[in-house]
Length: 150
Image (cartoon, rainbow, N blue to C red; front, side):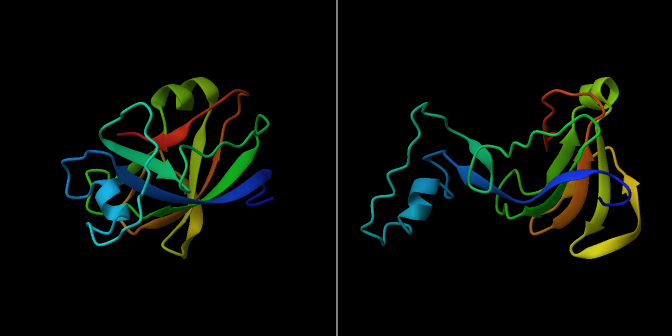
C-alpha cells in the first residue's frame, strides 16, 4: 500500500514515438538503417500501411493491467519522445472516465523529486525527457484508458 491506497501493481512506462511517414526526416526505416549506412534490413512490419507518428509504451502499443474497483496502479512515466509533434505529452483519463468511472490520477513526484504532499491532478504535461511518478485508479470496474489526451 502507498498513501493508504491499495496498490495492485507497479510499472515503468517508457514512452516513445515511431515516425511511420516515409517522407519524414525521422522515418523509422531510415533511423533503423542508420540513414543508409547500415546493410541491415530493418524489416518494419506495418501491415495496415499506417502513416503518421505512433506513440508506443515500452516498445509496444499499450500497457494493460487488470485492477479491481478501487485498486491503484503505480506508473513511473518516462517521456523519451524527441523531435516530434508528440514531444510534450498531456496524459490522463478522458473527462468521461473521470466523471462516470471515478478515475483519478495522483501525482507523487517529478523527475525523481517527490512532492511533499501527493496531489490529484486532472492531467499532466510531460515534456520530452521528463519523468513523473503517479498513481492511477478508478472506483468503477471496467476497462479504463490512461493515455495521451492529444
